[in-house]
Amino acid sequence: MNQDPATPWTLALDIGATKIAYGLIPDTHPLQAHHTGTVPTQPPGGDPLTQVEVAVRQALETSGIIPTRVGVGAPGIIETPGGLVRYNGDTIPGWAGTDLGEVISRQLKVPVACHNDVRIWAYGEQLLGAGREFPTGRVLYVSLGTGVGGALISDGQLVAGPAGSGGEISELVCADFRGRADRVENIASGTSLARYYNTLRADPRVGRIPWRAPVSGEPELPEIIHRLEEGDQLAGEIIEGNLAGLGRCLGALTSAFDLSAIIIGGGVADLGALVRDPIRRGIREAALLPNREIPVLASAINKHAPLVGAAAYAREWAVQE
Image (cartoon, rainbow, N blue to C red; front, side, top):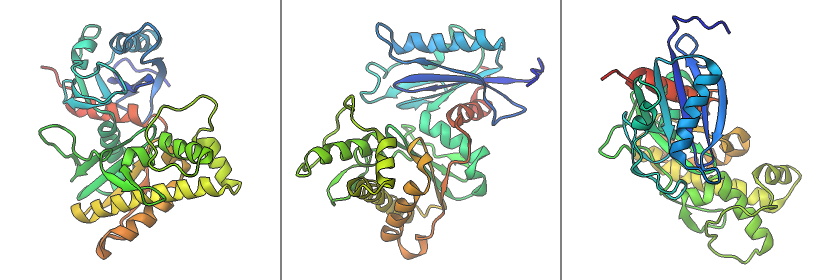
């Protein structure tokens, strides 16, 4: 791609617990991410704040582009658009209290806009992806990956509130394939689906399955899906049953908020019908009759969706003070 020096570019960062992805998105082609790369978030002997600086430096050095603005998606409850992390769980120790805008401004004197990583994806998906079909009404975005996250769009805009947590669903309760209740993230994330299979394959008598880190050598979700396709009964019961449980939870939300659509993204959503079909089944079981046929769509943005979303958010909200 020819780089017109007059073209405004956005430096986009997607900060996760494992890695920080970066890329540059031109205003003229908002779905394209260029000069992409990653750095580890928590390397041995390193810390996340230093790694954010490393990511910015690498992006500038490898691209040779001075961006017009910076957009950032990050875990936790983020004070927007400045980037103060007000709350985060245990995925990045000490992350709460971080001022992302201030960290980035040490290296780059351009406007910065930050938001929660799932809200960032939802914002971009609403403007540029599957959400374009629903310019009005309420759309719930559900991200299924290592964890579970959510965002709520109303009439094309992220729902605002005092904490910035609108649409977060990770702490809702749903049933697993056996009818046992737990928080959504412990039942329907990619990590949890794999943990269910590995735990129950070893001991079918286990009751509630507590969260634990993956064990080296255990089959991960892609291998478990392969086993499902080969006829593994336990894999099928867990994938279909746990995701149907998530669907019943989403069905209740569909009626409670009279949603116009649900859009599914994240790494688990890449499995396609294996994910969306049981979720749809659960929605039909739980939603009121007028809400049962709500559209359940897949993310339409490419693999760089978090970067594309961060750039879209920054184009609107990164303004010079």
